Length: 310
Image (cartoon, rainbow, N blue to C red; front, side):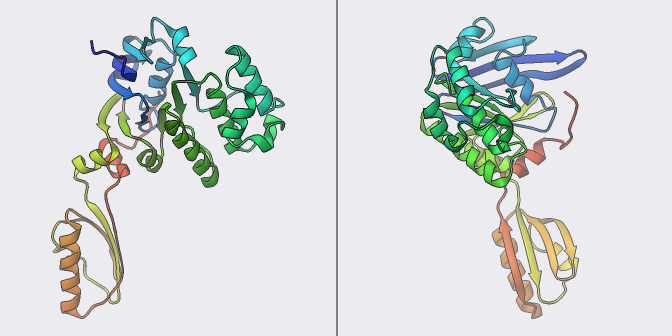
C-alpha cells in the first residue's frame, strides 16, 4: 500500500451498488495536497456517490478510502473534523441569517473561524443579518462555502457548486474556489461545466457509468486525445461542399452556400489550402474562426452523453 501521507485523498477499488445497479464500479484516484481536482461526468455517472462515500454519508460496498491521511471507513469522525463539505443543496432555516448560521456551525466545532472573518472572505458582509430566504442563489452558495470553512479544513469537497447560478454569481463563486487553493486548501469538486473545470482544476477524472475513463491534467488529456480543431468560415460567393471536402484532414463538414464548419486534423494545413483554393477561384474570405480542441471535446468523446438513473 502506498503511503497516503503526501495525499489529501487516496481511493482504491471503490464500489457501491443500489439494489441491482452498480453506481460505482472499481474507482481509483488520488488527489495531492493543495490541488484542485475535478470529477466530471454526466448525471448518473457516479460522481455524487463517490463524494458521499468519501465524506461518510454512504458506506461503500468495497474499497479503501484515505482522506487527509486517515482511513475514512475506520475513522469517519476524525475525517469529518478535517474536511469541509458543500453539497448540491444546503438546508437551513428560512429565517436564519448568515451570521447566525456561521456562529451555530462554529459552536459545533468548539469555536471555529470567527463569523465576521468568513463573512468578509466570502463577500457576505452586506447580507450578514438578512434572513436566508432573502438571499440570492449566488449568496446562498457563498454561504454554503463559508460554512464549509468554519472548521479550517484541510480539504473542501464541493458537489456541483455552480449549478443554477447566473453568469455573474458563477464567476464570483469560481473566484472564491480559486482563492481556496491560494490559501493552501485542497479542493475536490464535481461539475457539469467543462469550461470551469478546464479553468480551475489542476487535474480531472472523467467518470462514465461508474468508472473513470480518463484522468490527468486538462491540457494533457486534450493533447493525448488528438482532437481536431474546429474551423468556421464565411466566404463572399457560395462554395460547393466538394471543394471543402478536398482540403487536407477535413471531417465533419457542415453548412451550405457561404457559411461552413468543419473539423481539421491539421488546422494550419487546412487553412493554407483553403486560402489557395479561394485565391484560385477569385472568391474572398469574409470571416474565419479556428478553435483549438477543448476538454469538452475530450469529454464528449469519452462519454455517451446520456443521463442514467443512479
